[in-house]
Amino acid sequence: MIHVVPPQVAPDFVRTSPLAAESGFIAVNEATLQHPRYPNIYALGDACAASNAKTAAAARKQAPVVAVNALATLEGKPPLADYDGYGSCPLTVEAGKIVLAEFGYGGTLQPSFPNWLIDGTRPSRLSWLLKDTILPPVYWHGMLKGREWMVKPHRIGA
Image (cartoon, rainbow, N blue to C red; front, top):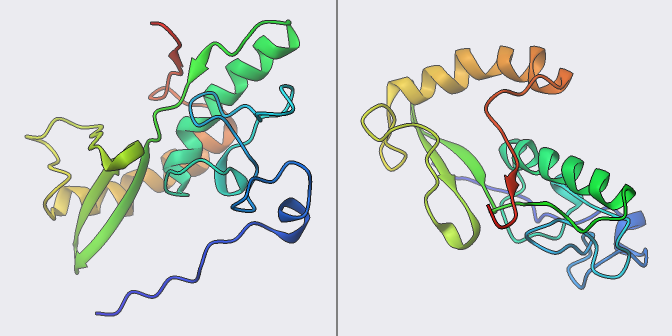
């Protein structure tokens, strides 16, 4: 098996803007996702310079943090929520089995499920079923419509 991935780069309009970090992505505080020079700007997802993996799972966890913090900024308050670098990469290792790798900043394991149900270090059929059958409708009919019941932003100091 060969796994080829093109280099991830920010779009030109981001890379050449005053918002860009040295990496070319939008500079952010890794915890609050707030821009270090422009406190009324937040970034998440593929354009964000956080050192986590650029995955839909990461953006899913970043969105509530940015929402809470942007609202706090509009009220003249400091950011209230922080992001732990969560990302998830379902790695196909054979037909019908994947490893559901879930991790945070520094590669720390951050499993969403109990280890007895889904062990994120081993391939499983249940992980495949989750990725192939369960998550697509949750994504299309829930998350993208703002219905998220599994992600709550972590409050700073909580």
